[in-house]
Picture 1 (spheres, rainbow, N blue to C red):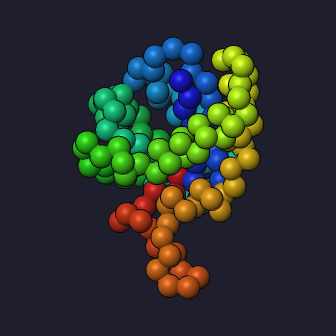
Picture 2 (cartoon, one colour):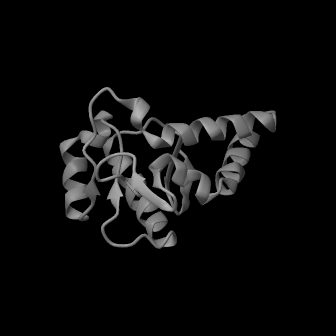
Length: 147
């Protein structure tokens, strides 16, 4: 399984998770990968975090952890995976990986890491913003996530 994050500024970290993720592991992933990604992408104060309504994301302990870390979290409607901008990114990664025809799981992991890093920020921003007027962007959703 892969876990990754992105913003309109580009890709954050992508990691391979070898076991099933529970709430405690999810919080550890956020701590070890999301926060460093936000720093590396030079995210300004006020960015909004978005994840779906998976039980480990909505667990009381996870909500408390996010609150203590001062995350602004986008409220997410239930049963709406089609709205999640990272789903388009996962699809692109699958297409790119398949084109390279990995021969085993190790090669697939390496290819995914390489291809993730190649996806340009301009392409990622298409999932987060829509053109309102020439040169003006607006969030696709109210209080759009930027990370």
